[in-house]
Image 1 (cartoon, rainbow, N blue to C red):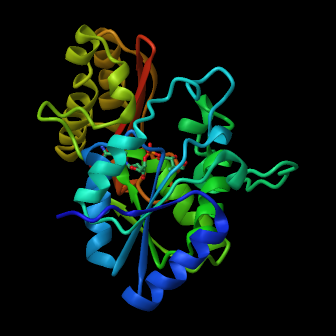
Image 2: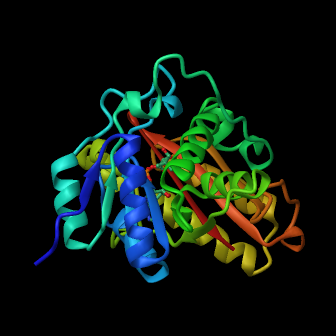
Length: 283
Ligand code: PAJ
């Protein structure tokens, strides 16, 4: 029988619980999430269990990473079913801070990430986003004090931003990037996929298909600029509004001219109706 994880909402019981887990289990792994959990999140939990004796999952829909025009109000929230799923996975602790536990009145400190956070990808379309992510993730690390924290490659730029921040601030946590989980047709799992209409859902896998075909052509020696131009056209022809399709250096996210400047990571973001999809693939 699965044991229900301990659910904690404020800092003081969190610190007590973490101290107890550390004594009992040694290492602590953290999986930061915004809830509405799916197989992508669960895969991070499974990776976490291999890395530490105790696993904590945070669930917090972070207002600071949403612009006023974005979907903070309507972001899917399924706390009860998330708890059931995490119980089955043997998670020890769910850190679900209240908004005032995370951002008490008068809160006025922020982390401003540079480097990969200014690569001209997600940041060009969501300028507030990585500041909000870096601030909340730094707080989550200081609250939970994990030895290791799992992030999905699905949000590749976010993974690089968090890794850079942990290194720059000497945060004593190892950041681990985990592979993207997908539907059978290739669509990357995302909490926001529930927004897709039946017709949009049929179109959605095109994004990954284009990434795969582009990666194959680059590997075969086709010129990067030509492959990207064809890929952009194919994504738009399928009915998406393209934000970007770019080939970047896989580690720094800096622009590359040809495969010789690699390793290359292809990164894309595109909108289908009201849903914004992002995906990426290594070449
Ligand atoms: P959220 O979108 O809930 O994602 C939580 C974690 O799950 C992230 O590390 C994300 O990359 C990973 N993830 C999402 N979909 C995935 C998939 N299909 N395969 C593998 N991993 C996947 O990302 C956030 O929340 C927030 O920005 C957060 C880091 C929690 C800060 O608020």
